[in-house]
Image (tube, rainbow, N blue to C red; front, side, top):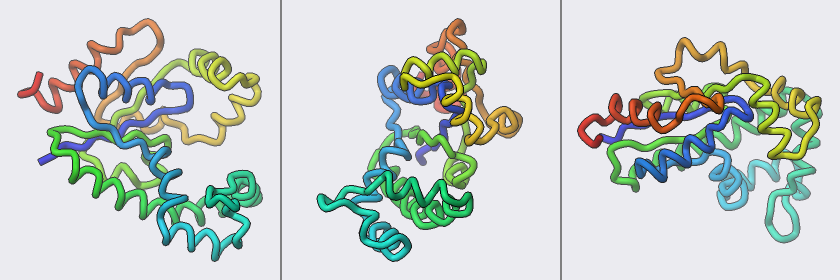
Length: 198
């Protein structure tokens, strides 16, 4: 039976880097929800038709790609619109994840999701892991990565869930503060999840 772990964290916490380490050092397959959702938005016929029914044909460009600025206008127009889009897309992402797990033939797989708890994806995994870092560290990382101002980054952070409130209910926490070594933390994680392979 394949063990599933859901990996999340606030913007700038370093969850994508943690997933990269899990792939490279421990050969853990990782399902990236954001990447796969973008793919499904283009490829999945039910998502395409649902978005067209909801927003009209302009939601897709002439080359078949999603018209992201057009969709963004709809999402930012009303908070309820986000829920409408999520209800359309998330069930297909969940199903795609389930099919992906069956193809891995691995003792442990992970899924990276910025909205692990909000989307309900956490219900599909056995364990949850939150990657944390101090606010100032996260701010500096995102400013450098995205060439953004501090005000822009703070605004994006306000739109995300408060992951500190999820720490007590999460099974594992990884500290990515820039000074605490990461690999020893991940090695301990592996020992707890699949001790026979470490």
